[in-house]
Length: 183
Image 1 (cartoon, rainbow, N blue to C red):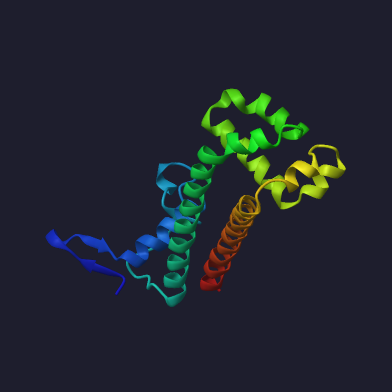
Image 2 (cartoon, rainbow, N blue to C red):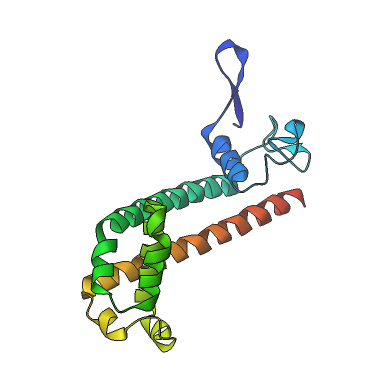
């Protein structure tokens, strides 16, 4: 059942419709334009009283919740590791030109600058040879980092990239699910 009558004869949305519509609004399909067009897609309401929530909508809503939860977990892990490891890693990588330049540039930005510096260090641990070829880092210093730290930073970068591509795929699924429904 898509809508139900609640207290005072007002119409209430089910949780499935709220999830589907929140995903649509998050990706920018709704909310553009003037006030009359907010909450509408192509001039039509996102979920009308007669619309039925299909299994595709339920799957997309569940996927949306899983992706957003994974993103918040990875962000909180990134912030924690940034606070805990950035100065330690910069102290161990004193001969790396890229890290020293980033420290000079982003040092005055506070915690956001620290996150940028941590991101640079994380990217360096994923593929240090390409940075060493350009003379930006000292490969011996990167090799002297503890293996568990390098693995942790590499896994964090790979997880963030996988979540980014998963969000792109989710957006493509929303696009095709919406256009398939209109055929």
